Amino acid sequence: MSQANVEAVERAFDAFNRGDIEGFLDITAEDVVQDWSRAIGPDGGVYRGREEVERFLRSWLDAFEESTVIVDELIDAGDRVVCAFHGRQRGRGSGAVVEGRGSVLVWTFRDGMVASVTLYQHRAEALASIESA
Image 1 (cartoon, rainbow, N blue to C red):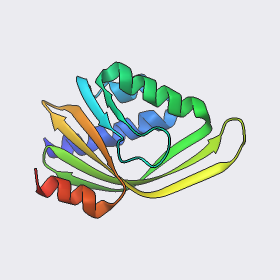
Image 2: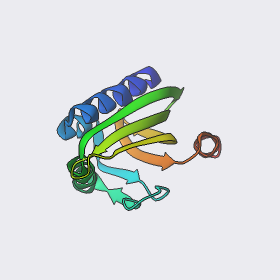
Image 3: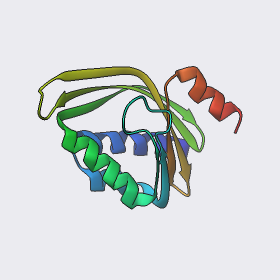
Image 4: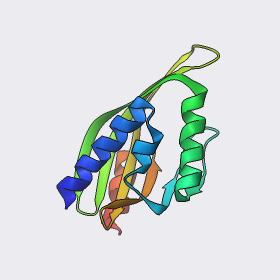
């Protein structure tokens, strides 16, 4: 099942990069938790359930004229997938280009669906979270 989880994460990023929020949410459990509490910036918080995650994603995409997430590395960890990534965004109003690098997401699967997505600022912290689980 773990290769299927890796492929699901790839599909989720493809959907997000197309602006297809529904496609992204298709692989999430109804009670999905998106933990952005470690985020640097105004969107830090914990989003519970598809509705809150959808609001977060729409808010993010609405803020940018362009927003692309580039996957740097995917690590198959059984019921978890660790994803190192970087992003490139262009502000809708300002046109300013922002690039971020170094963040890592840990995707946790339950019954073939995404149960949670947790943001970490450092790869080592994300990997430690898996080892301690």
